[in-house]
Length: 193
Image (cartoon, rainbow, N blue to C red):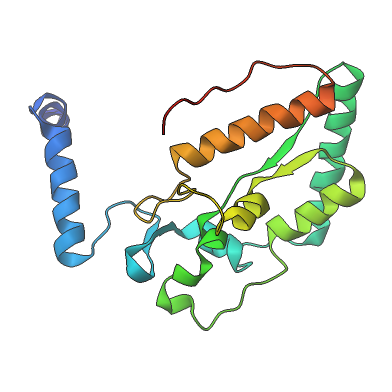
């Protein structure tokens, strides 16, 4: 029975142009049938793509509770204090979420739901403030830049932030570390977008 199992794997690995055919098949399925092959990707309004986990977080559907988050914050603060004693700088980073950024484009099936302040993001951010954990909130910062940025921070047809968004975040992270450590770090020099 090994032949039957090994033959498809061999054909997958040795068929010329296979990755291109897979992409073409996936694109045609999307254009013609609005079918997405990525397991956790959801199509929102106006063909915006989202990952289900980010939608769940936005609505607080995966909220673990205040007590477990408080425990995590205490552990995180201890890690930060230990690293500080060793001369290291710990920074917790809240990554940007497309569900927050484009909440008005979430799928229609979520229209009746309301954004919850009881999300892991909101509660853990408050805990970081109250316990003194160093953090950068790129999610909040991206949302504040939504109407003023000259380039896209999130793309409609992608579930992640754009290269431009990641470069802006990297530059901000470097500046934050410079401020925290009181030392000059190498600069990020972007010459073209």
